[in-house]
Length: 425
Image (cartoon, rainbow, N blue to C red):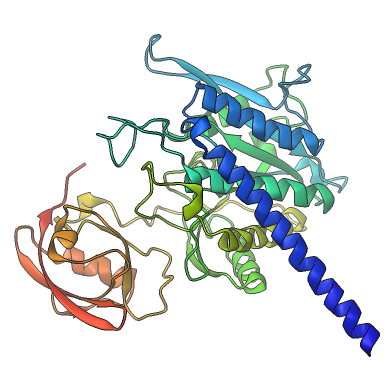
């Protein structure tokens, strides 16, 4: 009995040590990619080059297959240019590597697991920065060094635990400029240019895509999974992975959204998009490595391993289902805005809907509501979930003042909120 207990104790210790090493590797990847030295990883800058060399070094060390013929050092780079005019044109790249599947037939079906590695550089006007008047390095630790770090760990894992299907590990460039890298990759996959190797003959060989974007700020063990309706088996897979890894997931059927998976669903490829949601540091110089939840990133890694293991080994090809967008958050559908981002993942276990981000200078903030408050009533009517919240917004008129009841810690507070008109797009 003592010997059995000792073996069990040693096994647990080995698992914990392995987890600690993975977390440390992810932390180091984030700290480098989001360092001041890389200057915010804006496309076609020295930071972009350094980030690319770092990622390629990791892929080469795993001896994954390159995708461009005859280029020993740059075979992982899929180059592309973008820009509305000659003066604005920039040249950057996607970073792509392939792990062939082990099944004689299924290896001809490819799953893309991806993240974007670019960010906003120094910010400024028209950059996407939430502080456009402040020039400074936007490190992009959560957006999206977090996703890059997890995808690198997935590459290590599947390099040892080979799947039946082939896996494409993709790090997309110029995502912040309009999903340009992922769109360019799919355009490249439409026809053979004589340079492509180790990839399917065309995009029809890509049977699914998993995208990780902003996965570094898990709260309450919760994650959002979009695209669960784009294939008939995806929701069950996500739920099984959640059960195995003790992650609370909120599922959205459609595969639309402002990240690279949208490029794939537009080409009728089923997708899953994983994110741990927004926060006040999003697209600001304060999105730094010290703000990330590395235990949560380990949970995300474990969840994605389980999810992709199921997907890469399922006996039948994932079917594609066209799902209309369920995004009800467009301002054009409402006359008012509270100026906050609600918890779209339903991570709060307290009845109500948590305000994840309350924007300074907007209606809710001016009234006294703060990030983390749980909204329980709007204009005297209960709010228990996202649907309630959307319904309440649809009933309100601009330039009126209404009561909003929130729970802050153990204290119930009511604020008088003067409603601003929603901006029309």
